[in-house]
Length: 204
Image (cartoon, rainbow, N blue to C red; front, side):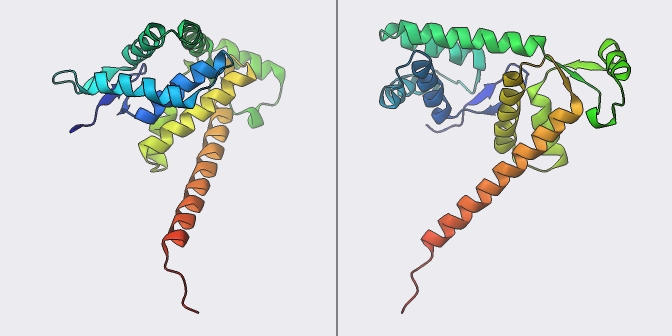
């Protein structure tokens, strides 16, 4: 592979193609039907990655095309149930994104239900956009794009698990900063551990 493939996301942003992400997606599909199989997921992911990187002059790929390719590989190898589960998950995630809106509201500053109701009915509502979290983190906090995308995915998952369709902007920011701080701390601890392992043993 002499080039890095770029993935165009549904929100219009781009990110580097990650083979490990394909492995995770396929294994999640297996897990959804109660049969996780990381070895099989790795084998099938190799097929997807090989195909993408061996298309002539290919530099970019749309995320929906990758999803369709994964489903096709699963179906053609006898894993129709996993392909169906993956498709259902994608539809459910798209519906949740379409139904979720962010309120321009600081819940800590909200003094009564009437104020909350006025905000709900006002134009101060924007559609859910995971990419906005990425942009805010990279622009305001200087966090690397790959880490920012991991934070955004975690925040989105937490919001959707709450079952909320109207989310105060202050809550999104609180979750965003909390997850970013946790991931940065974990990253620093991992780097420190790696440096410690790499350091030569002290001579007694």
